Length: 177
Image (cartoon, rainbow, N blue to C red):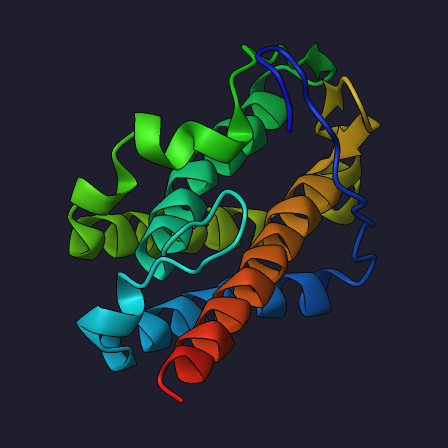
């Protein structure tokens, strides 16, 4: 388990093709909204019997909340190329409890996710390839992160959580047998 101040970077890669990246980036909206609309409340709030369990709702709120980081990192890269990120620490495994994800209004968070993704996609679509490459931040684990890499991270972040959400659904199905 991570301790306060510890941070483990996930393995991300840059999606090089801008059209492919933006298509995937915006398609995550429909993926998450489909989950939100079609999963029963029981499945949404199911707590699997695993170490450090999160409900599907907690995953969805977390994804939306971290999208705010993506938005801010994108804006920082545009306004202050080369800005260095500073992380404040915290226990990732228990953040869902500390931040009260289960008490959050999921409709609000889904709207936040849709809004932030749409704004960023629209703005990035209007940038030249040079602007996308020369607008960057310095990440403590990944080094220089262009706008395309920033968006790649957050697109893949959704994929990671979708794997955990699918695991929860499978465990829910298994618990009914």
